[in-house]
Length: 566
Ligand code: ATP
Ligand code: MG
Image: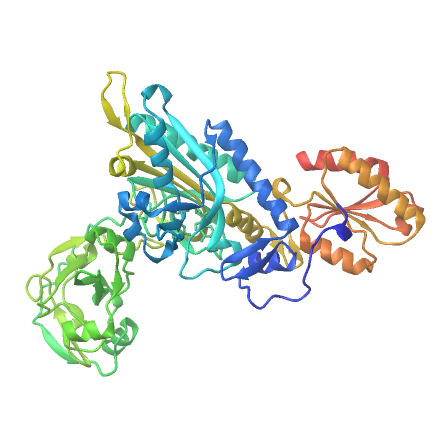
């Protein structure tokens, strides 16, 4: 393709609206443009990358035995009401009415629609196992769309759904997808890791997320330094402490803690370690307010708390509620004398003696408070986040932590949807059984953005070869007849060798062309100029390492096809 014939609006300046490298570079290299918050147009170069990622996904899904179909973007409310998700999904689900006042939504995911298809069209075990996939635009009205394609509201997803006769067979389907995902992300040139994950709004019994390792990732992953355990911190289990304090209980005392609200302020003021303080957090589920106790140096894990409470919603209580329940402003809540509401606590609390807690009164704390004697706990559970330095819950080492971008997610759904929607089949004995399901998503745009996040430098993008919009950027730097003739010939030869070539045929200065080529990030640049041609050579630059070699034009195609595969 010639640059003059394709819209590639590169930007020299850093776009102010972008925070992450991938977002900045996608805008600067002319891959995408914003239409509204979280809604983008894919420009020609961006679309080429998207299509390549899709193609890799398609090949691996087909190889794993999945069948491609395409479901509608709009789906009727009735299907979502059958599973209860019409209410449960909340504001992320964008809803609308048609001219007859019928309710619809734009699909954020397609369990309902595919389960409906299965129950209508599949009768017998003879047609199972089945795995259907599509590559399609999804809509989620994300609360905070950001980072360009990373977290959009409208985005392209590959979603797949498997239907099996029983749990054992469903595990085989799950494993096939797990393996396919490994191949897909490897082929996309990504450094990633599969981790154990929470099942969130999709539900089901178990799941793994595929995380691209990058500092800008929104997820924290913990993994064993010596073993195989790896999990999203949302999910990572924390076993109860093995050692319990043997301190003798001291009498409960009240102390004044003027203007000390935070853990840091209180521990500094009282000159104690945060491990001897217990935080009391008040949450509202919409149905009740509940107190959650965690150790001062630990972080409450809202996903675990919500799951433990089986709540559909969980938010920190408002200052007004805190004041009403504790009688004190925010910062002084404590379990002693807290009678109106339930109190649950992280396991670590059980092991502590003589702790500092809020006094339920302005500028007041208790010291030497003890569980059972001074306050009651309804239940102890795993309610805090794992962190670096904790022992691995699989006893295979010590946890380390890193940031990750979730590019793919595989779920074992069990019969959650088939039960709600009565998706059954007849087994060999003619008995009606519920299908056991799995579902499997990949964010296409997020995968492309992650590749940039992992492969860029100060000059621009460094595309992994398999998903690069072009393989070779052909850069004639002078206007001579000889340069034109060699460029034209290279353009033809390289394409004949199966390489995708972007020919910068603009009447621009050499520096501008080279800078744009570095920004756009094709794996190879071929520079044609009078000086080189006088010696019978052109220059071939590998974008990744910047290494330049001089070759006679006739050898370039062979060199590039060899280097690409080595
Ligand atoms: P997240 O926690 O990042 O919101 P999710 O758990 O909601 O993701 P899934 O429901 O598992 O995501 O969706 C499958 C895949 O779709 C994700 O692994 C991710 O790659 C992609 N995806 C999800 N939400 C978005 C979004 N807002 N923008 C772009 N891609 C997304
Ligand atoms: Mg989400």
